[in-house]
Image (cartoon, rainbow, N blue to C red; front, side, top):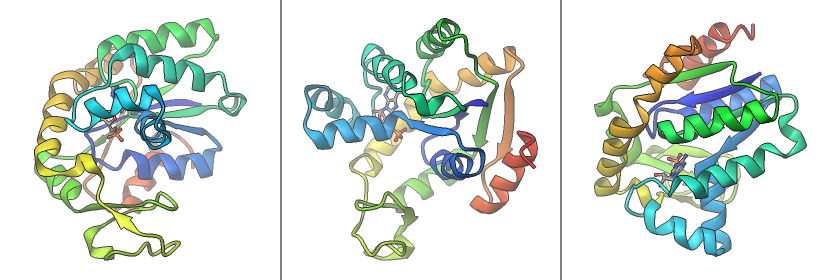
Length: 210
Ligand code: AMP
């Protein structure tokens, strides 16, 4: 099963992807994570990407499409994959469909984790991420990761100004993909304004995983 995850930044796509990865043995491909790894490694690609990410803008299509094409060659995608944070605009969606057709594959479902903008702002402002194990929690967790005791940090792009820019980009460029996938009869939508467990119960039901 090959899935595209749709939803605003902070809707909980990463959390749902993690669960799906474990339960359905799917490769989790997060372009945000791939880009943050490149930034941390200090590669040329990472340096270029950082200037866009810090402003809450999209990294140029050719950079991100190249990363995804390369990642899709990995054998771990053979039994299926979840794309998290990609595609982010229609050019990326079209490039993805073309690349998958070349690989004799296709997207089965586009899963929209639907959350209202006011809830998103609240969530992103209090989001904290463990720099050691990747756990995603909130300011309520304090400064220490409840999973591995590593340091919990705020992402650079979770500052208020950048949050606003990212939500504007989402509304203008990414939200139209909902119609793109509805037109392909692949859209599945869940209400993301509930606990992660409740949302996941719905995800499993709608993707026929239980
Ligand atoms: P995310 O972790 O998915 O919220 O992504 C963090 C940032 O990485 C975004 O605000 C963009 O700057 C960049 N990014 C992630 N995925 C993409 C993509 N598919 N296209 C362009 N930029 C992306």
